[in-house]
Image (cartoon, rainbow, N blue to C red; front, side, top):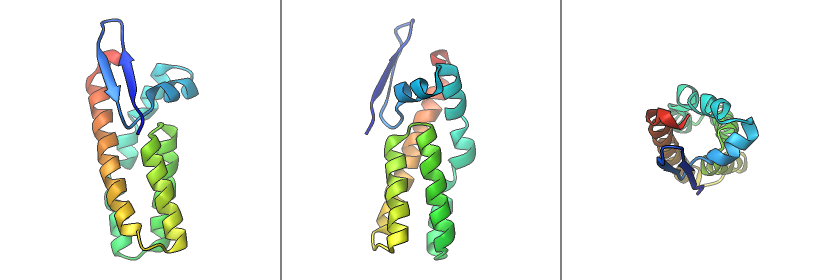
Length: 129
């Protein structure tokens, strides 16, 4: 789990446990660009957990693989390291026809919720940007 502490000029402290903000800012080159991309994540991936569960229930292996792969890439872009790792594990488990796919989906869904909650808190703390 990643932990980033942001301390701004007004001494506001915000700690993230699911998104590596410092790595994201470094990759994007500045805070504004990173946060702009980060705040788009809910638009594209808020329902990823539900879509993955539905594909699993419908035994649509190809769609399940595509959804896991897409989420892995999106999580990588926003530096949600644990989410990226879980999506990668799920993608591998699907390819291997592993018995733990259901468990990984539950863990992934929980992590998506945690990342979305962290993004919402960051968005509410607009003074950080």
